[in-house]
Length: 295
Image (cartoon, rainbow, N blue to C red; front, side, top):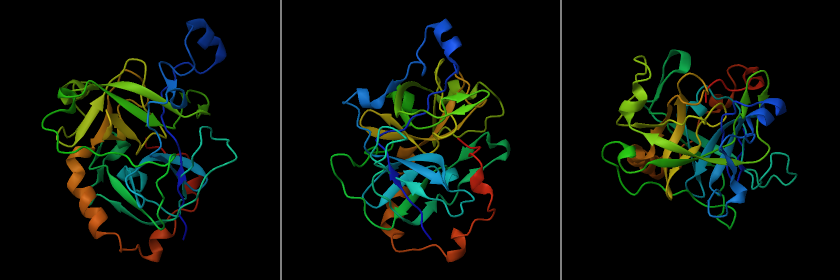
């Protein structure tokens, strides 16, 4: 059974509350509000980001840890059937040169991953994908840096902003629209207390999760599993948001620094384990016909 990976130079989903030319001109704002094409800033390293596809449809993002391992969100592997993952060195979705294809040998969801009703919150939302053959490091393929140690307290105590990388929807009104170019955006990192005051129903975990709030931007469908960068290393994995993709509401991420032991143990002890054949058989053959409802 084949699972693919397409290498992408960057991925970000910036929420667009302006979805048509008329309103965009009226507000005198760019199409992606406060966002920028990653390719226009050569200082941003975006060569470690991967795109995850279920069937023919884009689903999630991820980060290249080593030549054999991908870091993503656990819900990106939830109820998975036969789903290709593509890794491509490209700056547009419609580029003819899609790069190399890779098979996934196995995936490793965190053993304590849990997903509640209505997808309002996820816990231990982290997973690793094992490539069947190594992805060689080059000028256009790099490995993401992980936090050197566990961060005590809130990430916001140390970092005021993070760089979000993704390739998701840019319009969620009448028509769903994905960007042609890969994008990046800076988001303000907030304390866990600031984010949870939005709703008493948010059963989040400050020890293993972090959040951002931005008045004009938000991640959305398609950004799941992608990285939030704090300086040179990945501090967060896109997990879930509150009130859909509406800017001004908190966005939650899995804190990478809290799972360094899980990542290390999985890569060292799970390299030779394979999934039974039935894991590759889709539970619902029509599942891949739908866009993912999780972020």
